[in-house]
Image 1 (spheres, rainbow, N blue to C red):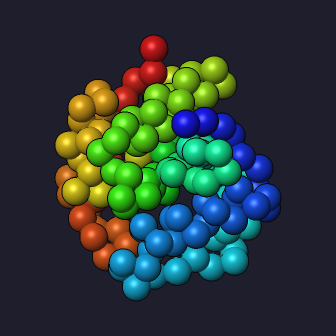
Image 2: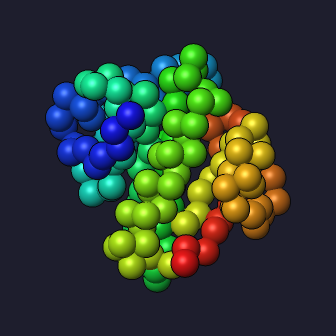
Length: 143
């Protein structure tokens, strides 16, 4: 498995959109707007690949004041539980550290809280609804 930063607008980015759409959006009856996708050109886009096939992805957004936010974490459904998400998170944390960020935060789906807790993240909000499902704000200090 290869982990890498991908460029907005490339064929790899098109795979990223499709994976996120299949895993995160379609099950909720949602889709991406062109405006939303255009805003991603300033974000750090990360993919996990087996040869040229994307296995999982996520992105990092600079929130200012040394804080970076994880968004759109997705792993192919039939590959979940095989360490791809953990590898993506470790890679994302290393990139964030290398770029001087001190804290990584996210809006985690309630169903994913246990996964992030195993990686050292803590819940720091009450439950709230986003894209029609329950979420929590979670964060971790980067050393």
